[in-house]
Image 1 (spheres, rainbow, N blue to C red):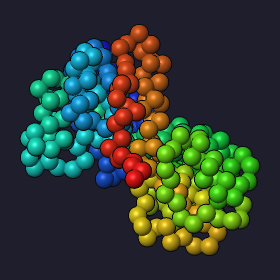
Image 2 (image 1 turned 120 degrees about the horizontal axis):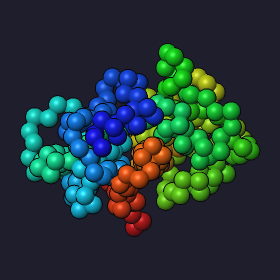
Image 3 (image 1 turned 60 degrees about the vertical axis):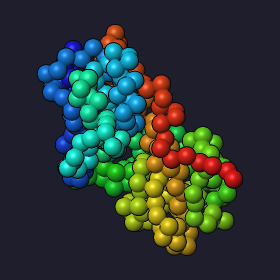
Length: 262
């Protein structure tokens, strides 16, 4: 098996051509012609993840977030990024990311959020020119509910410890928009399409000053996107059922954001 055989499967599901201009989805470390005996999937590429891949005999890693977003001026062990790069190159581990390429397909990140909430009549929130891909999803709750009821529903469906929210609506909510990861850029699209509730991650303080009849929930970056790892793993196992493919054993503990009750 070659790196190119694995990436072909991932890219059939999440084509690189649809990624956002600023993104760095694709093969980040390694050659398409490198031999692969096993692949490890996770959310972020950390030094610990590279160690886990080596221990499992995996010479390829696939993550959602790219290990390298922009140009790197220095590679050294002083930063987690630099150390992960050094470890991967030294061990001969190829590193690949499916980021906005996996965000923008209907069965990807936002689609998984919509399915988890059992939204009905789901459409792409901010479609690309071809209409078949794009950022976010929008649809209808299975039953109308108040803001307080929606908070409980979302918390249960995503298994959340905490939700950051604007003031809960007292009126009933029917139409909901979702966006995995940082969601500030799609607030205007959610409002334009008539969403009463917008669920995403990583919105800033001022976004919580919402217009009348509109509510925002920030459920966390990791929490909103984590399901994509299982989705990508399923694509590989469907195409290569006898190939050694794993999800990181530390996946559930890999969120860099920690919550404390004091």
